[in-house]
Length: 478
Ligand SMILES: C[S@@+](CC[C@H](N)C(=O)[O-])C[C@H]1O[C@@H](n2cnc3c(N)ncnc32)[C@H](O)[C@@H]1O
Image (cartoon, rainbow, N blue to C red; front, top):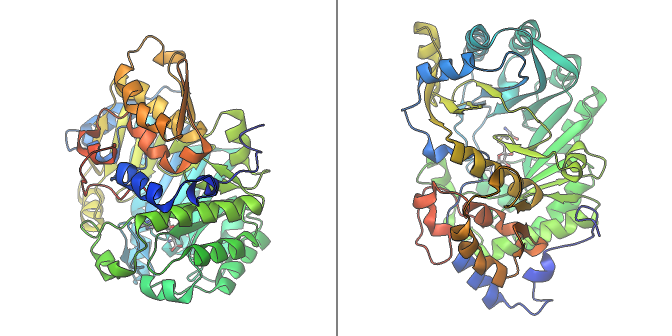
């Protein structure tokens, strides 16, 4: 039966109905519960250093093949209010002038990038992320989109997407998005339970979420993504199942289900999260499985690590066709190998490496207002080995399988990886046949752990491999 249409739930292997007990779940947590990246790039952002700066970024941009299509990403690091759980670099910018000024800088950065890559490149994917990009005033968004259309050729079937906070949708914004040609919105929900919302400092009624979706759909924006989180304080298997069931009734075409990343050493606002109310790892695994069970029963198809989509959504079609990709925005149908990121902390993906802009808003503003050149702070060059391994990791994250004897991997020595995969095989999470490594459905929650086997930059990550010691660099893998 086809992987993508099979009615299946990993719950079978996580609730004891196949004979596994809570003790074996604890064992799994011990073995696989270290800290791991999400593999939205390879090398991951942990490998970025200031050895790559504006000069290297300029060189890479100038070297882009003349006919290479590009994707565009605009980062807006402002929110109307801050949520305690949020791991993103965001701040509250109340002044309309400050928000307008930021929009002007996005256009200035775009202009500098276009001066290097040349005008009229084809664009099939554009995204505004944050933070909450609808904090850009309507006039500012119009100006940015005017610049985009002036500098680039936006294809008629392009996906234009924006993240929204359903609690703070400015009047007229849904219609503005429709008028500007946006095709998809992503909105945060996380959880519908009052107690969970209270602990997270994010009060959002189901009615607010529903009204936001109705408004964008009425404006002609048909693609809707919703984000949920498990592992938040006070969540239980039953409560996350109830949230998933209610949200599924809105029939958003996609859902992302993230495990709460508790990184208070990095994100100070998370110190306000009551740690004693956080579900333990075993409970997180059960919550994840329960949400998956509900969503699959509601007709959604599981994709990769953490996405679910309705069968007629392009993400499912891409998964079935083997064209699904993974980049900094997560799972995507975007086939472009070039992503140009504008805005504070935005990351660009170029054929020979990744670059990231200055993270904090004030120095990013100064870099554009007071100096020439790009506001790039760090990055990493990709060696041929990185490209090979990055390809394998992306394929695994997207299709849950990879053939080590085909394509660029053929002839490469993977004996170390074969040995490292043995515990996964014993646990029933990976099947190996010839050169083919296939992650089983039961292994889906451990996809990042399997990907990490191919990550030679992971010395600092050894914690997530069976038997390793914890490292607080990333959030927990489970
Ligand atoms: C960049 S945020 C934008 C959300 C949007 N501004 C809103 O308020 O609805 C995108 C998503 O990241 C996820 N996220 C943020 N912090 C997280 C964390 N600590 N752990 C897991 N997911 C997180 C949430 O699901 C959130 O909806």
